Image (cartoon, rainbow, N blue to C red; front, side, top):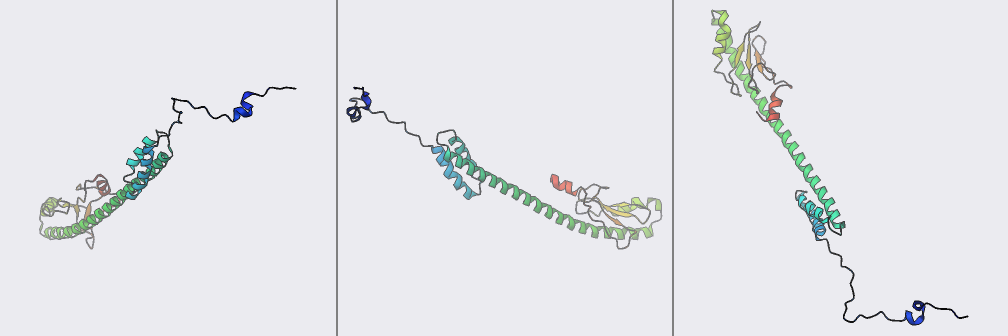
Length: 217
């Protein structure tokens, strides 16, 4: 019984060469464009790590541009590495700023302690002058005013004159302290009625810390 064989399955059709078009070029597949933005962003991101990440913002921007073009693998790597570099540089800056602030605070505290020691010696001299003056005073009602006039020439390391406050005992010699304001937490005082004439130190909750925070010292 005869049967029909499709033309494309016949031996003669399978051996037929591909047609040649005379006068026409064979169409070529489209060529993939190389992502130069991604490539440059990738190698520059690795190179920026040699600068501790401070140059990483440049390859990060280039990689972000490369992500908008075909072939995003290299651009993705560049963006990731650049982000790590930016994070590393930010950490270094924050650490350096914190270290500088700590060093500045320690240096400021050393200066204040030295100034307090100088104030102690100055108030001791003023205390002796007041005690000697008390022996010769006649009008006790004006003693505090005259005592203040007596020690007015004594100026503490912060540029303020010492003050004498009359109390129940022999009186109190007072320095305004680092904030240059009397009757605050950082005042340095000398009680003339106490033995040893020991002056007080700067209190922990004094405005000195506020001055350091605002940079007004």
